[in-house]
Image (cartoon, rainbow, N blue to C red; front, side, top):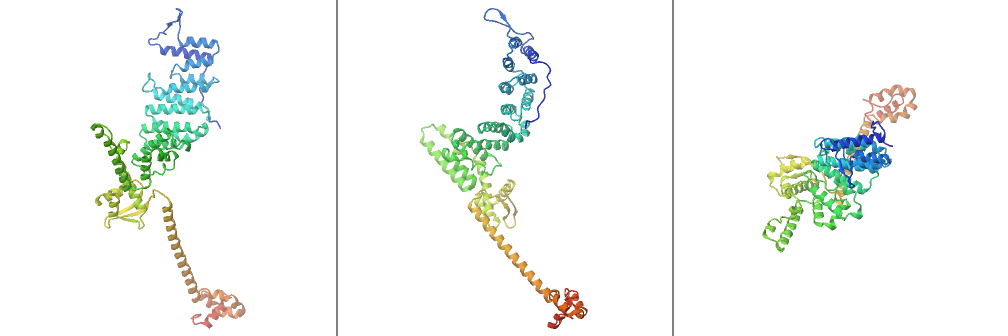
Amino acid sequence: MPGPATTLLIEGSFEELAEELAQYLDHVRKPGGATSSTPTTGGEEGSTTIHGEVTRLLEGNQKDDVLKKLVTAKFIQTYNLLIHLIRQSPNVNIFLPRICQSLSNPITTSPVNGPAMALTALTTIFNILQSDNDVRFHVFLAIISVVKSHGLYEVLKPQLKNLDRWIIEWDSDEEEQQKMFLEIAMAADDAGEAEESYHYLLRALRTIPPSESSSPQARKLSLRALRTALLHPSHFDFSDLTPLDAMRGLQRTDPIWFELLEIFNGKNLDDYEDFREEHDSEESEDSSSDDTSSSDKEHSGSWLEKNGLDDGILTRKIRLLTLTSLAASSGSRSLPYASIARALSVPQDDVEMWVIDVIRAGLVEGKLSQSNQTFLIHRATHRLFGEKQWREVASRLDVWRGSLTNVLRVLREERESSRKEMMINGGGGGRGGLGMGGLDGSEGRMMNGGGGNRRGGGGEGRGGGAGRDMGMDGTTGFE
């Protein structure tokens, strides 16, 4: 269903409005107020004003040519009038992208208010178009461009909740979606919104089909996403990267990067240190064997440094992930300080600091017992959930099932014991007296009905006979 239209209140015919706009453009273009004229090739002086050219085109009813002339004038202050004129053309989709391109460029006449004016004009264009008009896609890209150029991401962010609906309405293909997601990711990154930037970078990666998973573009985006995830201080879950076809393509194109991804996805500190030592040694061998100057060798650096990675950030992150795995795999739900210190390769005095950090990161919940020098685990996150974890779930379910079986057995035993106790104390007399009271007649009811009531359940009337039988067969029927 088309969305609500945006109404522009403009009065006048196309010809009148076009001439008025052309005159106004001529006025603001001239430096001192006089319209500039240049001689023609024939020696005659001919006007080169926009108004003169527009008038000539209008005489030939060339409305599209008129619009081409007005659009190329790049005058933002009259955008409402210009948009109104464009809407009257049968070729609206030809001119709107051009005016959007003009609005995307910096407005030198108004460096302070220019971005806001451009966004206002672009928003007007976006809203006057039908919701399923694919030109909206190009208008939105222009809006993102202005936002990115002037650091106005906070203006764009509230509108992104509509993005999925717009993609469906515009019927955007994977290439268009990828372009849009990357533009948003760059705008968010420039604004310091690291989480938002990473989110849209992942969405761009998901648009890459399996057949192009090893393409240069897929490799570039995969390395960018992996580097962002590794260096982000609060990103610990790498399971959002491993299933992506483009990321799996790194196994063929960049096996070292893929190995690093596997370490942070499910391995521990020891594996990371082995990786670092192995590739640092390879770098040193390569640099010593190359015919390079001594200054080049001094600045060669490690593999991590060459690829823009910070070893300090990575080491801290892998320690927190190692502690997470240690807590999740603990069968006793408690970890001695000594075990934590050994796994993290840190002094035992620093254990509490690392435990506090892993709790703050939301990876583990628990409390420290300084008196016992242990960390009591309440909840821990599994970094990987594979066959081993499913076995652990099955084992815990078996334990719970055994516990429930024991509870049911105890309940049955208690119920049976209670029933027997009631029968011994006369509680079963009511059931036995169903037939006996009727056979004994009124005498039985009168003589023994009270006995049934006295012992708590012989029953009124018919229960009296059973009360008498209990008194005859045992010594506890009456007292």
